[in-house]
Length: 167
Image (cartoon, rainbow, N blue to C red; front, side, top):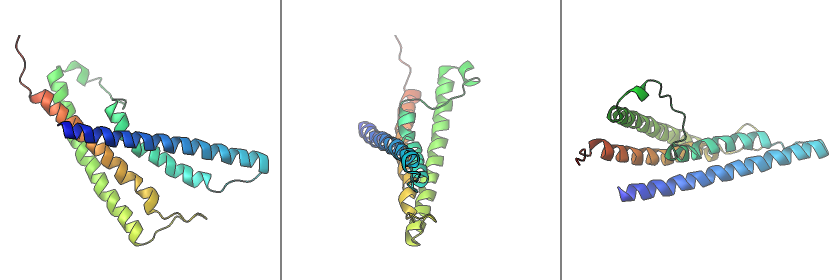
């Protein structure tokens, strides 16, 4: 359990920092593009494309951070009426389903990235970005998220199946 926590913490921190760097780079790129349009009446011609890639990076690299900090949106109008044990059981089942879904995304997006790499697929813009490069963000980000979910499941199993303490 300690190893899983440490691995999850390190990967979540890496994802968080990549998301922050992506955000800062996107802000700088858009600011630079706005300034060049205003001052020189010319666009950088890459801000839209790279900005889109960076937005995806922020989303996928930041997903595990959001989960670990419990900052995702939750609708609890029904489950708040249940006992805490039942709520924990529902959360455990939901996390297991979520982990299966995330692992499927990792697998399928990895296949897509591999296909883009093998076929040398490029964007149809003047940059001709090799599509496997921005595509790597999805399986890497979802891989990091899967480790965070796995750690959360381990914690929930420990709490759920731990014998109630008697005073």
